[in-house]
Image (cartoon, rainbow, N blue to C red):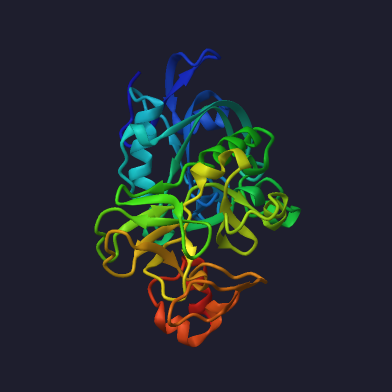
Amino acid sequence: MKRTPNIEFLDIVNEDDVVIDQKPRSEIHGLGLLHREIHVWFVTPDGKIIFQHRAKDKETYPDLLDVTVGGHVEPGMTYEETAIKEMEEEAGIHVDPKELFPLGKIRRRSVDTITGKINNVFRMQYAYIYEGEVSDLQVEKGKSLGFEVWSIDRIGSLKNDEKKRFVPFIYSKELTAVLEELKKLTCKQTSFVSIKVHKGLPSKIHGRGLFAVSPISKDEVVAKKAGCILNGLDLKAFGPTGHIELQIADDSYLGPKSMEDFEKNMIFINHSCDPNVGIRGDREFVAMRDIEIGEELAIDYAMIDDVDSVMSCTCGSVNCRKTVTGRDWEKPELQRKYRGYFSKYLEDKIVRG
């Protein structure tokens, strides 16, 4: 076939996903010929999906929210190679193939009611766990307006007025299985603890605690909370088990899926009004100062809690408040004392005032 310069050609495939021909992209969408695409869903560790906001002059579905990264599989390329290439072009992310989680291939045919374009595809779905800031993602000029973050649970129950903001695939039946797989990826049960600490040892503060077994330097990561996204009702179902959760948003917490996961999920970090540990982001616990062997690691719950609660404190420190509430983060003196060590959730609240 004689090629015209600057015209994009794509492979046409049969129902077995075998290449049988090549045609210009415009002809493929005009006639609804079967071809290949990829989707890459960026999910955050706290159970949110990052959507790309399509440019207002896009040929199909302009000015709507779409999958984080998507694209056609070009002739001679595999699905995986295309996913890696598109991630770099559309989000500025360089990844190793091992960082991609295949979610399966979808056979789908859709029609843009505005343009009449037909998208008849085999679409390979991938997931990528993105732990950075959304603002650090690169916006592809001329093709995207930026990115928006929505929780996985919310996408599964969009209201009619919200659906108008998304391309139709986002609220289609085909996406249900994808959402379930994304939930599983963000529900890791085993929390990380540094080799420099030992968890679960008897504590003078309360029950079991977290202790240094090697010297720890200031700002060193000592633990990282894992778990599923839970709400207040989920936590009540556990009964009186103590502080098993880490709050990451309004009525959203990281915690064990069940009591069977309790031990591997728990970090056993107690409260102290004179803490030596703070938090970075929404789940990393870091040393606020150098910590010596044998010291118990503790955090002030004021750095992580925004709940209706009252607790008698037994930390024994000189600065003990005696009574700790779930709103202590609002105290100006504690905001000054712990600046830079509040959870991202509370830091955002403090900044907003």
